[in-house]
Structure formats: C-alpha cells, structure tokens
Image: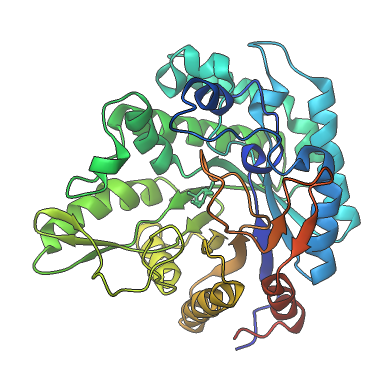
Length: 393
Ligand code: BGC
C-alpha cells in the first residue's frame, strides 16, 4: 500500500531517557534515593551532547520526523529561575532538525518534572497550571525556531498510575495481577486541566502550531466473559483520556501490546503466547486496535502514532513486529481513518525508567565506550527504506 502524501515516518525519544545527567529532575532524585529498585540514568546515551549524531543517523537512513522532548528541569532547574543556555540548546536542536530536512515533533513534557515541582506536590499543587504555563512561555523561542507539531504531555494516563505507585498507594508488581493500578483520579483531573490550558496557551503563542497529547493505549480486550470489567478498565485507562483530546489538533496513539481482562480483572496471556524480551505479549496488531478505539473516542481528530515498538535483542523480531504494526496502520488508512504518521519507539536503546536491560532501539548505544558509540541495527535502514519508497509492507 502506498503511503498518503505527507504521512511521516520517523522515530521518537524522550529527554531523560537519552540525554544524561538530568540532575535537577524528579526522576534523578528517585534514582538516587532508591538504588535498590532503580538503576541510575547516569550519562544515559549522552545525547545532550550527541544529538547531532542521532539526527544524522535518523536523517541518513531516510526517516522524515524526529519526536524528542524538552526537559522542563533543565529550563527551570530552580523554581522561577530559567536557563537561557537550556533554551538555546533546544533551539539549536530544532534548527538542527530543520537543517537536516527532519520534521521536529516536540514533546514539552515526557514524564519528568523538575524536582522542586514534585517535592512541592507535583500535579496536585494548586498552582500546577500556572507553573506549567509559565514554563511554556519561556520555551516560546524554541517552538518559534520551526516547530509545527507539539505534544503537551506524554502518556498522562501513565503519569496518573505512576503517581499511585510512587506515593506507595499501589505497587506495580502486585498491581499488574488481577487488580490493575488505576490512574489516580485527582491527578487525572489535574492533568486534563493542565493539558487544556497548555494547548490553549501554545495555540495563542504560536499561530498555526498543531497541539495534542499522547495516550498510552492499553488495548483492553475481554476474555472468558470479562466484557463488563474490560469496558470499565478501558474507560479508566484509555477512553477518558482519549475523549479529553476531542478539541485538539491531533491525538498521539502509543501502543505496544494488549491487556486481556476476565470477569475478575487482568489475566495473563497464555504461557505459550509469544513474548518480547521484557515479557510483554508480542502483539503487533495492538496499534491498529488502538487507532480504531482512539477514532471512536475522539471522532474527527487526526491521529499520529507517536510511539510503537518492541524491546527485543533480536532485530529480525523488531522488523517482523514493525511489519505487523505497519500493516495494521495500513488497514486503518485503507478504511479512511485520518492517520498522519508513524513514529517508532525508539531511535536509541535508552534508559527504560529504572532499567537498562530493555532494548527498544533502532540504534544500539555502547555506554561502556567513552564516545557512546552508536551502531545502527538493520531495522533502522529497513524503516528508512519504507519512508523513502512510500510503500507500506
Ligand atoms: C513511554 C516511553 C517508554 C516506552 C516503553 C512509553 O510508556 O512514553 O518513555 O520508554 O513506553 O516502555
């Protein structure tokens, strides 16, 4: 199938996962305070210094778009104190993308907060909207450098789940059994309010900028009579967040696998079901279901796949998974759904939130080597060929 004109094929990353030494962020603080549970991000992939190489590899392979994030903790490391150097840094990145012919898709918040914001109550602070929109005012020069598409918050539904995990109210190990930890409702309401305020402000600040948020689609599917419970979980985990995008310029779909739900809650996939290297069920069709549910919840809102990928040490499996995922995207396009792009997660093997073992990258990074050697995997050239040929597998 031929890709529609303007459909972007690219790859995605997030600042804390690749930049290194994000010392003013809350995640850096968590990593230092819980060494028994979280591996440290340390110098990560050193992309704060090596972003040019990352973009060269992406563009050289033929990919057309790069989704990366701006780190609030670098822009405002201390409450009310803004770093002109950090603003310049991200301006150079946007200009660098444009010089290479890459479409920059910029996330202004990808999971991490400045530590001061979290220590002061995080999204439940009374001034959360004010603090976030003040940060957005300061990054205006970055977006003015040439950004046409911006994401306010990455996976707010995950942020609201993680709030309950971090505050000790729920724990992921037990939670992922029958009782899925549900998003914290107060944090959910706060994040929806922050998103709407951020979207309105960004639109006012930057004429023509397309603004949306991205949702982690759990792709809930009922088994063994679990329809009612599955509908409840889908509502809390995905749907309410997707409906909040009704007036956005686009919505970002992020999908990796699915969640099977019986009458008592989540059930594991059959033991013989294929798995990825981190134990998720191998289910490339997830992204197609996620797009269709997104369109049902937010009708008329254009969709970008802002993340999709697989943790595997076998790059042939990555290509097979992505082939299946792109076929599912193709079938949505064939049905007339307004899908505008596919951004693979991730460009680099990176810091997977407390773990270094998962490898989602199209490019390997040798972190033991002083120059953090990047080695493209065959999947990078393979995806680049699809972008160049405009032909879906
Ligand atoms: C996040 C990424 C993460 C990826 C794989 C998404 O939840 O946005 O930061 O690395 O999935 O787990």
